[in-house]
Figure 1 (cartoon, rainbow, N blue to C red):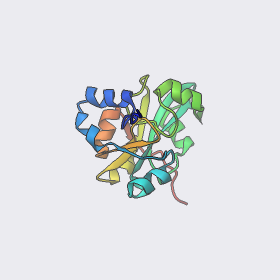
Figure 2: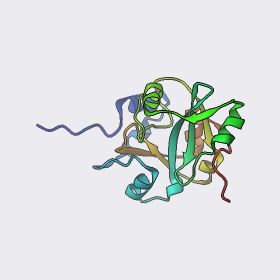
Figure 3: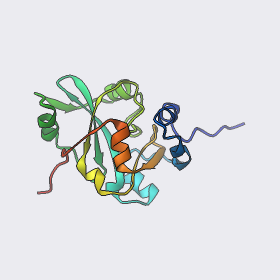
Figure 4: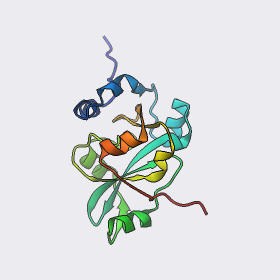
Length: 165
């Protein structure tokens, strides 16, 4: 007998229950193929690339920090460094991402992490009525109002995306 994998990562389901967001569970979409990039997720959902919320882990002076940014943007590391008042900011390695969040790259949700980290959310996420974020695996996403996403992630709204030239 073959069993179907859960729609979302169990830690994510636990987190939305704890946050009073259990109404999101039926909204989770699971895809037969992984959608680890923002482009793949947007194509699978049928939404604009900018409606994807990427959850990216950086290291600021040795401390992990989560940055939420729309799928069409890149994070400006210098802006993150300035925002945090850090000497150095780098992209976290895959093993640190998993250790910090409990999830693999491509499936990191904006909340429900193994450890509490500082969270920055780029202001452009608020330009949408709905954004889509990973639900703990590269196969699952969920929709949420960006204001609620920022609130439940405990994020500070900042401007950290690269500006167009």
